[in-house]
Length: 206
Image (cartoon, rainbow, N blue to C red):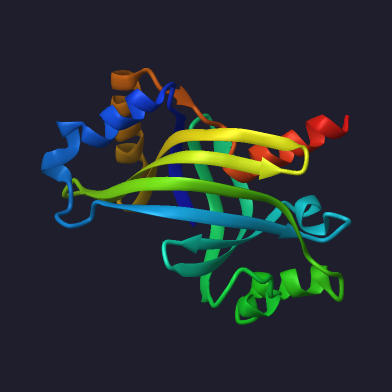
């Protein structure tokens, strides 16, 4: 299960301050700091069968590598997001549900899609600056994302910070998030990038 906090960042200047903040330097894993460009495409059928089942199928370029992800059973409570997720390395951005065939949920995906073609519903392109923290009780990844959600109905900017729990307790994750949010006046981001893109599409259809 993926567990993370998401906060909206008010300005680019504040994003830069978070990246340079010495608050967490003593907890930072040496050599973990890196910057990558991500290009993610989210796929569904013309009838939006996956969306109706609260499933999301993504293929994302992470630096020089492609990774397919399947997400389901997602929910959020304020800034805290939890969802089931599996990731599989792939060769390119072409959708191929069979890459998940060894999992039960992958079988469900294949059954739901059937012979229907998959199309790109929306795309996200963003620059990610990230580093890992080791508190002694848990390991977390802090990511600052800046870019854009791209849909046929229009685009929306991305400027947010995520803190993902790799190991440890959710309680400490919440403490780290509260400290960061209070320091920089961050706003809880209750929707994922995918959910924001879907909302933009639906809003412009109404």
